[in-house]
Each structure stands twice: as C-alpha cells, then as structure tokens.
Image (cartoon, rainbow over all chains, first blue to last red; front, side, top):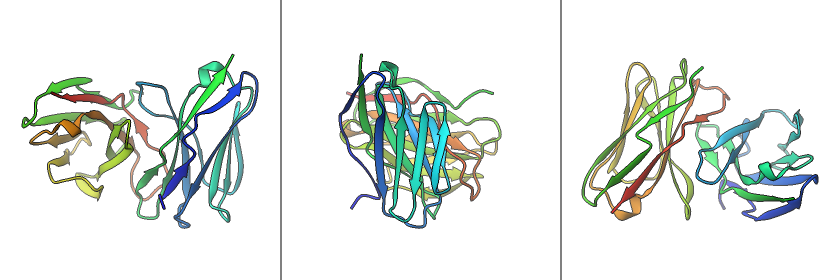
Length: 110
Length: 114
C-alpha cells in the first residue's frame, strides 16, 4: 500500500461545477497535509494546507481533513478551465518526510 | 520576496557524464529538499538538507548526492549519468526544523540524457 494514495483520474467536470479530489494516507501520526497544483510542464504550486480535523476554506478552495478515517480532500467550487491541472496531495510524516501522492488530473470543460 | 531559484533550467548531457544542479531557497528557509519527477514515477523524494546536514534520504543509488552550504543554498550532483536519469529535478524549501510549514518549489531543472 502506498503511503499517500490518490485517484489518478482523469476527473472531468463542467465549468461552474464543484470538483472533488480525494486522498488517503496510511501514516496515522501525520500532522500536516498539503495540496499542490501542477500545470503541465510547470512545477507544483502550493494552494492549501491543513493541520486540524474539519474544513479550511480559502476562496473557491476548501480542504477537508478527517484523521479518524485517514483522508483529506480538496473541493474546488465554481470550477474554471484554468483549474485544469494535476493536483498533488502531500503529507508531512512523523519523521518530517514529505510524501506525495501520484496526483489527480483534473479537466474542467467549458 | 524571491522564490526558490534553480539553475540551470535546462540541461542536456550524455551517458556517463556527471551534472551539478543548484538551488537557492527562499530567504530565511533552512530546509532544502530535492525531488525527481518523471511521467511514469511521479514525484520521488531524493534527499533533504537542513543546516548543512542531510536529514532524510530517499531510495536512490549513491550516484545521486547533495550538499548544503552555510547560506542554505544546495547543490545536487548526479554522476555516471544514465538514460533513465532524464527527468525534471525539483528543489523545494521550507522554514525547516520540526515544524509543519509547507514546502515551496522552484521551477525545476529539466535534464535530458542523450
């Protein structure tokens, strides 16, 4: 089992819809979780981080963390074609390692 | 505030050669991590340096090495290059220490091996 797992997609949503990206992890001791967006040919860009159970909102983005069920998700409201990218989930493990999922490719269709 | 700077942006080498990549972290950041990204394997962790010491190491052969200087700048060296080393090499910096601060990535160095 991989330490951080994501559905590779592609996930396709129409413009204006909510895109839901999910990630599960195996290390229960992890304290912090991150979402990165990566456009094709570019480097990952941090968009959200979350440390506590519950929801964290930033503009159109909401990160959700459920430590009991070991999953973290990212919701993108009012999806735009410019949101089309690969989204990487990452966790900082107890030994301070950063562990990345393989990424979910999102396509927002006009 | 300047971001993470990686040089060079592109590099073409032949098998058997060696290469050195450079990374300047965000000012004040003391931790520098290196990753290899390929279409098939995704983002793979190489190593992390903090205060000039290698703190963590991924599962890569000894041909891959790195170091960090007192100003937190870091270099990564790959010796005896193989075709499979063709990849995007990414550097990421964070404040460091045992904290939860996120990493910020540079634009990467795209290495092609002929």
